[in-house]
Length: 339
Image 1 (cartoon, rainbow, N blue to C red):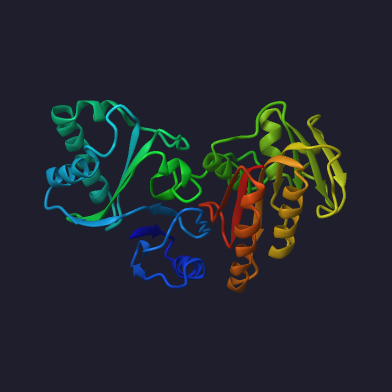
Image 2: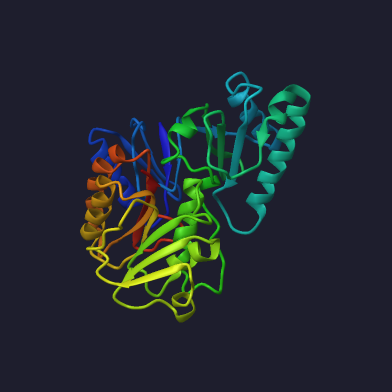
């Protein structure tokens, strides 16, 4: 049984995604968490799953030390002593700091016990949110009350192989970027997509920003020292228009074709979801970019099944493909990846 976490407002749509992917699967909704389901996760893409816990097991532990022992029992002899692993441990109950404090105490007890019993495992425990590599295993532990919760041990290289579904961020939550100089908060979607992908726009690279005005998605690469071709009917913010790194064209974002392959396609254009999906697939088929971040904006819940087109057609065109409702998204998702 795998556990798929979701925001409370998107749990029904996650269930719909799972039913379309595996019509015969048994789904169990878990209040405040998401969906538990017995489905194959190889190649599965779920836009509304915030985090995935493969082979999750419900557990009961009566004390701090008992929780630490449960975690050790799940990984000892399973995770190679010499290979890196991570621990995602968080509370999913109550308010305030009581649950967080309990998790801190469990971490401390775990470290003390590993120091005595499995010192090599303690040395190989990583503290990072970097995207998984093929050597890293993952232990996830959710406390749904002080004495109950779920454990999921994912042996390398599965976390790496399923990184479009298993987030390297605990419970799939990415802290939103903060930059009051940006034209709008929309830039946070681009930054979060970069963090989840484990790549970012760099100095010297070339980006095409389709539907660029007022310029939040052009702002990010310009600040990094990249060059931007901004396509929109309306101009960007005045200071961005003056930047020597920006080339602006007053044109239709859906008709623009770059003169050569660019490093990044970024697109946060306001359009019907089918148009944005068709645009991304066209660029992928023509290999016009090396990396991409594209927002799919919805008019209503009935548009969500359109994502099945992307799930089916985009991955074969990519070396890496993600489709996720970001922490920074509203009624939209972002598709991002590497061609």
